[in-house]
Length: 328
Image (cartoon, rainbow, N blue to C red):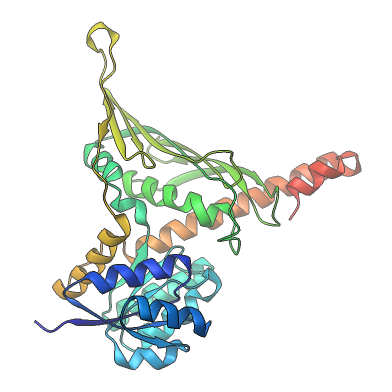
């Protein structure tokens, strides 16, 4: 079988890793890497023994698939052009800048019969894979995802940067429509929402509480599911899974199951290539990427509504510092 011709568009911090992983695959020919910064494109091209491009339009006629790792604001334009050129697309999350853009991309991929996979990498974390396999009928879900401040990814807020991972997981687990969204959040050290707390109430009675922050002192990523007779917990930083069933003998808790070191990015790119070669639906489809993004925007809208209500209620008596923290 001939090798699949692939290019990586955007080889910054994360895109460089995409290029390195794809260059390792026997079934892939990495035709080139693209970046608007010529020196960066040249450097990664040398590392991966491939060709450098500075305009993504030039590489599209040469490949059958692309991995898009550009800033979120450019996801729609680059993905649309790639699909129109007949390329299968892997695009990092979020799928697009708005749900309307995401929906258009999903429809276009379906119309053209092309693979559109979204980079929700936690689906490939072994602890999460184990948890998803163990979930039966969830009752309550808790997720906490906090990280230290980083100058990267400031083009989006914490909901689209971090929380969207857990939104995708919750939607994967809960087979029900959402009845109510409750959310609060605030910008603290940037002009976008840096921390958020969300409660999702589903029509089937399941409740999910999610917290995300990008200004924590130390990182933490936990995902817990409570169901009849069992409590399931995944720590995606430590790559551990714990299942607790009550009652336990002598009140002892089971030891967490520790998974060997894996490379989730490599796994999801392998899944993308496999979906193309086998003609199968990718593990994180464009439709699923749209659903997570659509929910993220409902949360953002609720936070804006709460902020407006709070400011109207407090009026001019609101201290300047607090006013800054809840204003965009």
